[in-house]
Amino acid sequence: MAIIIKLILALFIFLALPEIVCKKWNLKKGTKKFVNITCKIIAVAVFIYVGIDVIKLFSK
Image 1 (cartoon, rainbow, N blue to C red):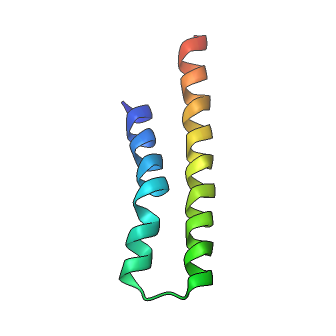
Image 2 (image 1 turned 90 degrees about the horizontal axis):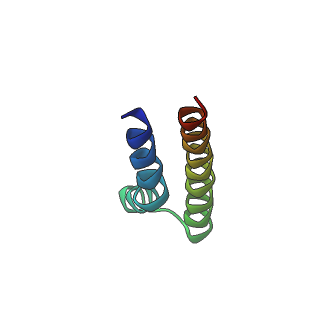
């Protein structure tokens, strides 16, 4: 169950969070690009964490 929640969180960070942040605050163009890249890096880290959990789950 926790793996599914982590996966949903990663997808939210990857797809929705940059749009929410950019719409909430009126950011400059360079800052929007920084927010997008930062959110994608964090989402990839969470995806890797989910992958490690899946490997641990099936290796038992």
